[in-house]
Image (cartoon, rainbow, N blue to C red):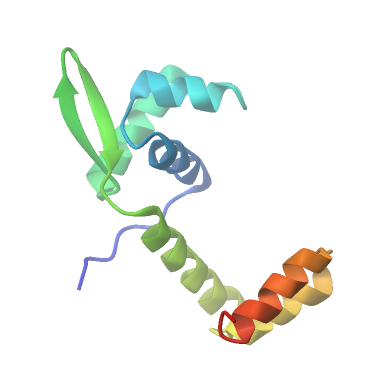
Length: 124
């Protein structure tokens, strides 16, 4: 069984999304991507990427004079765990309660409702 990784904060998750998308990235690559959406310091991104490597989410290798990072954990594994943790904390583990909340409190499009029905019916 894989070891349980420490939880990700919101900014860590934002950085991981960039690395998952790019598959292999330097601190500069991630910094430029994040900075396009919100102000952030280069050193903040560098520190967070080092922290993510320490936590086991990223692997780094030397490429010339700079490190490049790649995901150490698949995106679906991380998201799956985060969703399970959320459902456990907020809905006492009840996925049905989460679905009920999403359907009653969200403005789902007709297409989204059809897709949910298809998934509930076993993917048919």
